Image (cartoon, rainbow, N blue to C red; front, side, top):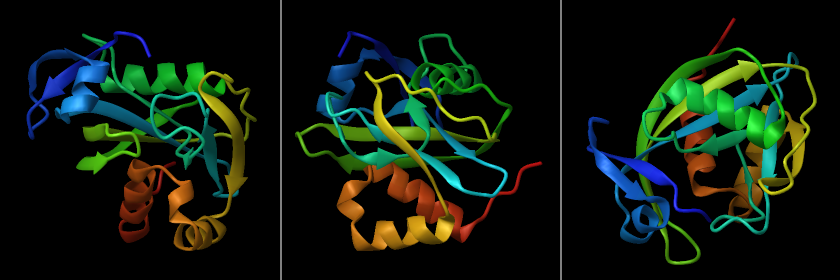
Length: 174
């Protein structure tokens, strides 16, 4: 993991300053994040399996891509950048919602984020960056729901929250 600076924010997503990534996760400081959900035209979810070498949540299934904006980078630009960097995909994205969560991770780190969630539709197949993801799959919502209920430990904490929110309040995009 590099020494990337994260945007430290308050509960209203107002910037308080910038903090090294590892420090933010060690101390559980609230910071800004982005998550991207890609669907194909059949409505299937595109998931990635995080690379095992990731500093947390390695080997777990999650949303198409996720990251943190760079200093002075807006959340939409960050979403497009990481979708391209992780999955080799470019498509129109629409901001859907944001949510605040705090989750203890398997290695003593803490995710405490205001996560800005973007949605896109494409039938392009990903070309994954093996440093970020080790696998990908398209999956129907009903099958994904079954997998999440049967083996929740195979999914990232934030993705489970995103899926739950999407089930309660479906989001439709053109």
